[in-house]
Image 1 (tube, rainbow, N blue to C red):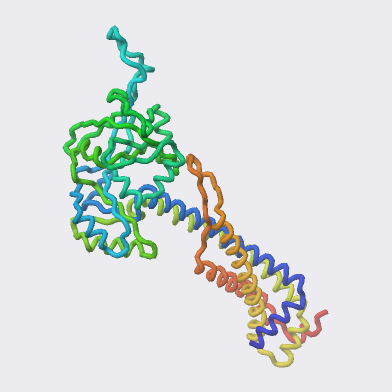
Image 2 (image 1 turned 60 degrees about the vertical axis):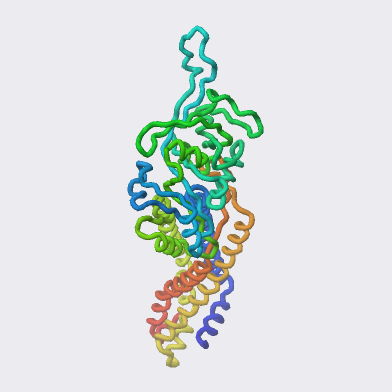
Amino acid sequence: MALMKLAVRNLLRNKRRTVITLTALVAGVGAMVAIKGFIGGQQRQILDNQMRGTLGALQVHKKGYVENVLGSPLTLDFADTPALRARIAAVPGVAAVSPRIEFGAQVSTPDKKPAPADGSDLPEADQGSASFLMMTAFDPALERHVTRKRWEWVKWGRGEMLQSAELEQVVLNEDFARGVEVPMWRSGTELPPIEQRLAVLAPDRDASLNGVNVVMVGTLASATPNDRRMGIMSLGPAQALLRMEGRVTEYGLDVAEGFDVNQTRDAVQAALGADFEVHTWEQRIPFVKDIIETEDFVFGVVSSIFLFVVLLGVVNAMLMSVLERVREIGTMLAVGMRRWRIVTLFISEGVVLGLIGGTLGALLGFAWVAWAESRGLSIPAPGANVPSIVRPHVDVSFLIRAVFQATAGAALASLWPAWRASRLRPVEALAHT
């Protein structure tokens, strides 16, 4: 404690240099916390779009489904029964269960004009078109509790969401619908005749091609650049189309607040047994996990370089302090102070600088993160037409780690100046002018 008091007193002897060094530390640590908060907010938004927008926190499939997911294996389906839903819903942490079918389909639009009365072919410009997309079928009453962001994306698109699991309705991506000029049906108006409706064509689980006529009731705005060829459909008509009455290919689950997703996954897996497999977002979309890990790695490298540059200022300040106090150091050595205590004294000054600068910087950065989180930062996402609001977030553990890194870094930066001070010869130091 005596050395720490002496270290503080020595730092106050040259207030200007101490303030400049502290300012650099505060700015460096504050910037680190702010950047980490922004990256954390961006990552939370990406995960929220995936979990609350398309997948759900957990997904239940028949065993082997994910290994063959690129082929949309309709044969790896299972019976959707109240007993099975109840067994899953009884697992602690499961907040909602929604049955779904994912399948590849073709949307065929009606001709823009009636066929000529003379029996000739309709001009190509007036003929309908056909486009492929990935379709997800669900019951909107259940799905809303699992992927509620879909409803927000419809709000930013046009029209409305599916109204029932039994109505022959679809909602398509807005850009996809615009590209194929899909007509939209407004609820409350008379349904168009069959020949003016959309046709959804898809091979059933026995590979036989079937079709169903539907109306488009709304469009989904794009939240990410790669979700153009996507659509959603009412579960009942999709089951009839695919000859899968009473059967689905997956359950989407929502996990209650405060429950660990991985622990809940293990509990659901134990409840269902070996015939099923339960996955988190990390297992279904590993490329997102890779993106997050890459961002964390790059941030670690950049923050280390940034902190190193800031700590060079500490080295410079401590060297200047040694040069200014050569006679003082010589006096302390002459009266019997051990060289290791000289080293400890200068390192203590670095520790005080790092602790104060790191703490103030962490608090300053956290204040900005808290302010930005409450207001939200509008950051346009490339290729998306949904407002992208990033809410920065940083964990308390990172703040503690940032203060520790600043303190430890300042102590290490002081080591060389401290060692140089301890190597002075008392006679030469006392003769120094």
